[in-house]
Image (cartoon, rainbow over all chains, first blue to last red):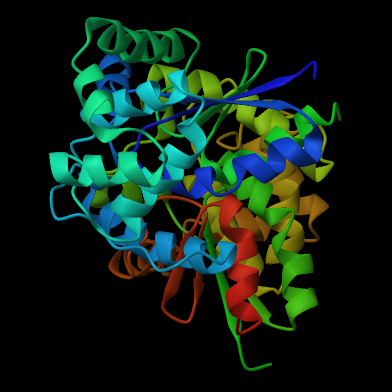
Amino acid sequence: MSKTLEFFFDYASPYSYLASAQVEVLAVRTGVELRWRPFLLGAVFKATGNVPPISCPAKARYLFKDLAHWTQFLGLPPCRFPEAFPIPSIKANRLGLVAAEQGLIAPFSHAAFRAAFVDGKDLGDGAVLEEVARASGLEPGPALARIENQEIKDALRRNTEEAVARGAFGAPTFFVGEEMFFGNDRLMLVERMLRGA
Amino acid sequence: MSKTLEFFFDYASPYSYLASAQVEVLAVRTGVELRWRPFLLGAVFKATGNVPPISCPAKARYLFKDLAHWTQFLGLPPCRFPEAFPIPSIKANRLGLVAAEQGLIAPFSHAAFRAAFVDGKDLGDGAVLEEVARASGLEPGPALARIENQEIKDALRRNTEEAVARGAFGAPTFFVGEEMFFGNDRLMLVERMLRGA
């Protein structure tokens, strides 16, 4: 495996959820290593002056219809949204890094995205995080304790700063080497590049 | 033909150009009528509070790389950009409506987008518009005179206001009935809907 596909995302981002349902099979098809890299989308917006789509009312109205079209297109269950919006995802993102330490970030990510966007659960709620941790094979107690560790907090901040330094302004963002692709809707361009076209 | 695909666009919009290269074959494949509907993107931004991607520096940097990936993906020539940015497109948009009166909006649109994004010519320049008009089968003199007519000015304003009233916030925007799709990157979702899936 010579190539790597880096996938920067935030568990609060519905388009990251859509990407999460496609990246693994894409990596298998193209024979590359997939790196799941949680970052903090709110901090990316702040650093770049970008704004979430929800801040333009017409865009916000469209977003829900767009997500419905996408879930149908991809064969995913209908989207539900947590009531707390924007979704408080910092703990979930840190927990993703804890899962990564144990080689469990893929199952953790699917469980976390599913909790947020299929079940409409609040990722800021400790009980929900416990449930997601358990579902993905983590021991909930130690894992939730570890997200308060400075090492994990720093790792999330570093992922965020690195993504911004490399040009990211939103989520999901993909890198193939230093070639950047923004959005779940660019995965066919990512695949084209991974195939060396 | 029972269904119609409405394609709202502005000749200043590079993503509308990418869509223009795909919509005709999509309409043929799905057996629907294609309606080319120029509008004024600047007025859409003003009405909705949306901002052009270029207003976030990181997004602006990405836009040029993204367009390069897209043109390669679609087999189009490399993009060049006019020096005047944002592209002053109001006259080109009105000329598109004049072309539509003569059943020539498809060839006119290809010529106008090509002038702007392949040849990097200034669509605000009367000589360029003349050339584009001629290339698409219009008589340049009468066509350029007609864009000053109030009927044409009103028609462009009406297209713009109608698109905003129906939910548009950017370009290109597609409608299948009242189902809206935003972006050249949503054409596979448009196609899915046109096939009644």
